[in-house]
Image (cartoon, rainbow, N blue to C red):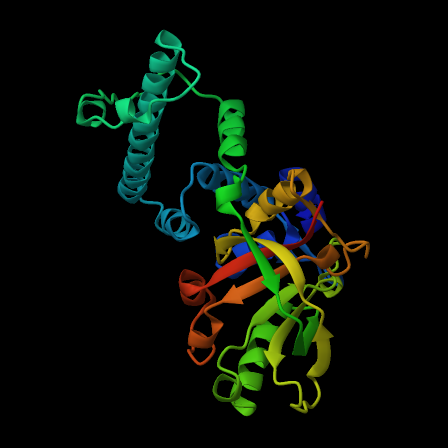
Length: 329
């Protein structure tokens, strides 16, 4: 099998280039460099490894556990991880079965005694909540990859309760922008230097930290990918190069929180914004140059900036809000 480029992998496996780079940063996969070319390629073994990771992610296995399984190649460890995840799923099934049983009980009562007015008192008896029989269902029939994809797609659809509506206030920001190489890492380093040099945590302890791809990096050229970070600062704070002072207009956004690395959930929140009855997405027509106005807010950053953590250690602690600009219909 011929080695594939990052854009071929991205299209073929429906993975963002950001996700691929993050997997490589964590050591989950490896790429190779072609001599004389500014892009990376992936071998057949790496493509197989990516497919394995995708299956495990659809089975809701955390990236940390996936890394342990792939690193140790230990069947006993994999068994333990799968059993832990199955126990979590069983607990969800039990909870959902309880809710379904109660709903069925209400439906049966209404069907047997149709009235114009509801009598809620009949639904509050202790008998209702102590006599429901909850049975765990174990599905023994064979499940195909198509079944897994359909199940993954179903649970990946965000409900209104999964999404927060935020108003981000206008702010003056210090912009940190790098292109090529590992721009996420380089801008992170510069952001930490800025916070220390300007004592930002002291003069503005409520500072916020936004980021976005710039440019989005859709080609195979490693120099065609960048990342920009914004740190909110006092309006009158002068900044020096390489930092650039900008104004963030703020606005209304819908937000979905992810642990660091779960970038495959970006389509979930975008789909919610595009299909919502009350709100509509307000995407910028920039050809994807700056993620069409989408933002990532790095949460709890003030507690991470001064710690010398590896990407893996930082990823365990860091949470990110995926933000889509919206307006009311």
